[in-house]
Amino acid sequence: MFCVLLAGMLAMAAMSFKIRMRLGDAGHLKLYPGILVLAGCTGSLFPDVPALWNFILHGNLRHVTVGPVPTHSLFFGIVFFCIALLIGYLIYGERTKALSVGLFAGAGFISHLMLDDLAEGSIYYLYPFYGEPFSVFYSFLV
Image 1 (spheres, rainbow, N blue to C red):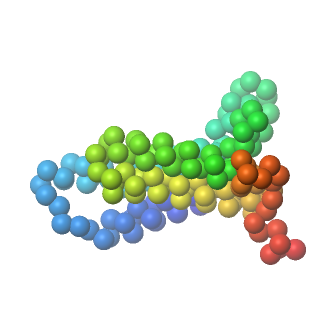
Image 2 (cartoon, one colour):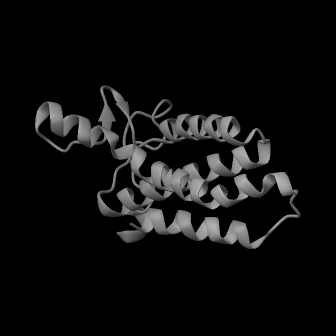
C-alpha cells in the first residue's frame, strides 16, 4: 500500500509544477496523472507476479523467482523500467513524458524491493553480478 501511496504523491508533486501547454495537449494532460499512478502501481506489484503464477500451478505463494531468475532484483527492475519507458513513448510520443512514466514505474519497483527487504530481508539486488541475497537494512538493524 505504501508503494501505491508513494507513486500517487510523486504524481501530484509532478503535476504541481505545471508547464505551459498548447490546446492540443489538453486531452493527454488529463490522462497524464492517471498514467503515472498506474505506472507506479504496476511497478510496485510487478515483482510479485510470480506469486499468482505459483499459486495457480504449484499451490504456494513463493514469489521471489521466475525459474532461475529472481524477480526481486535490480536487473528485473531495469527491464521493467525499459518496458514502461517504451509504453510511455508509444502513448505520448515525447521523451520527457515517457521518461516520467518509466521513472514512476521504477520508483514503485524500488520501493517494493525496499519494503520487502525490511519485512523479509535478503533480496537478490545484484542478481547477474552477485548470486547471493543480502539485506541493505540488516547491518543497521542488528
